[in-house]
Length: 267
Ligand SMILES: [Fe+2]
Ligand SMILES: [Fe+2]
Image (cartoon, rainbow, N blue to C red; front, side):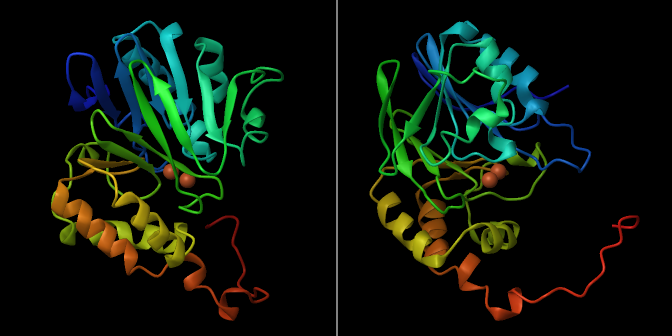
């Protein structure tokens, strides 16, 4: 049985919930978090995930408002662990998919023919403000962190920044429920992922320059534990500023005609 969703924020009209263990931990699929923002009698799902998470997330959401009241599916980018369940969400709700314009015409491949008609908001590279209930969410440019068309979502009520694949750590669903408040011991769990999945240090630095202007209580990534509190968040930005990653680390040695044999049996 999955655990109850973790309440990251709650007041009378507004709540942010994190689901961290909807995927069976058999080691094949990476642990992933899905988020639900509730405002009054509507809400948005952030990075709904693959088919593995759909049923539990749908039931969890139904406890807060009727499914037909769901306003949006917010997709930080178009990876399978982000929106492979798109077809089922479009069938079961009236929500609009909010995704980068870069992916707007690729996302329909996740759904049956015609199902995405008038159901996709393609966000321009500059991002924008999106009304949700009585408030607005900030769609924040995060291109190349890691995907070519990538957005993060800032909720000014809870002051949570939902960062998709940025700030992720490799943990179990239970461990992901314990927010990180000191960065140093956490770096080892983030480093390998960020070195390979983030595109370049230039992009990381452009992004931190923007993000430092926001009042952030928590960073909530799509895998692993949230990063919470002023000190840990500042330390995280500083760590990104100095991190070499992606194209910084690739050179001619990375592009050689391969000679290693891949064994299809003992792979
Ligand atoms: Fe991704
Ligand atoms: Fe991911």
